[in-house]
Length: 90
Image (tube, rainbow, N blue to C red; front, top):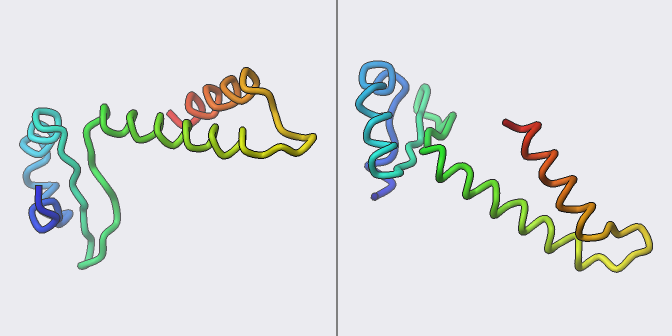
């Protein structure tokens, strides 16, 4: 999808919420919602959001395992911390 097609105003969202949600779920789209001409929020399919969160967790894990200081956590503890953080963000 082109970015120009992904930007919608908040008034468009209000008037077309059901249709947008259907389109988002069907095609796993992401929309940028604007208010007063400024981008304010992202509306996206939950599966895409979850994949993004998993990717961020893996990147965080990689960054943490590169750290070789004496304070670096083990992989098991790191995964546990990441799972708890993801649960608390939901």
